[in-house]
Length: 334
Image 1: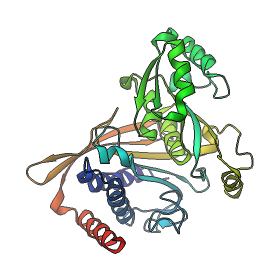
Image 2 (image 1 turned 60 degrees about the vertical axis):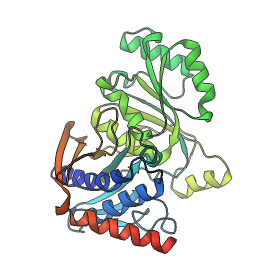
Image 3 (image 1 turned 135 degrees about the vertical axis):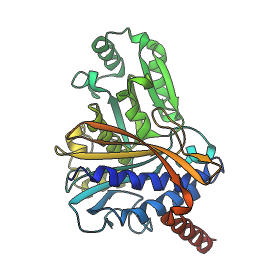
């Protein structure tokens, strides 16, 4: 992939973040998500790729745009797989909370896992723990191994986990061994990325979340030198069959980084919508300007760029176009 693609991709996440940020705290997650999706889809037309969405807003009959299998880009550049989450954390934006992102990962054709829309058990960590812990171990064993590798006491570890009823058993064990717990209300991708940022103060990310978000987080961690191990959790026969249909022969096997994001190059970009662990949210200024902070990374070079941009909103025609399209779609639904 061309290195210039990294900066093209971050322009797409910036526009999606700018489109969804006005919905912060308004209690309308669907409008926030729709605004981000419309803006992201419009901006993709300017990106020099022949892209196929492998992780997106759903199947063709479920999503009007950025659906699985949709072609994106100007059809002039390299042939690539595209994974998107226009607004990772719709509830976060609706409630005015932290860690909402607009996210894209791009890899060569056939590299990204076509992850089914179901839960995935996850274990994510930074570079210091690569090759030293396993999702197949009991959580107590994982914590002991992690503490030894990091030169810490188990009680000095900080573990991040989504605050969900389904995690009661894990949380009980974490409390029993005495680690610090940092709960997330939402924001699975940001949570899994956090252990790779020393300033976040997170040693491990554990628990279950969406499988598509797991692939996006794995793409980020490949660029950051960390890892994510995953294991799909089909809830019933239909979800099991869905895995088989998507080419996953053993839905219960451990998924490695190579399984999820391939062995070649990956580009990852994210723009903060609301403030988070490592990115600021969209900030507005009186003169019709808005500031965004993004991260864009490439696995091949391990280059990590933080991009702070100041946007003059009247000069964003695609932003206004996507807003009008979203309002028209809302009127039709009503």
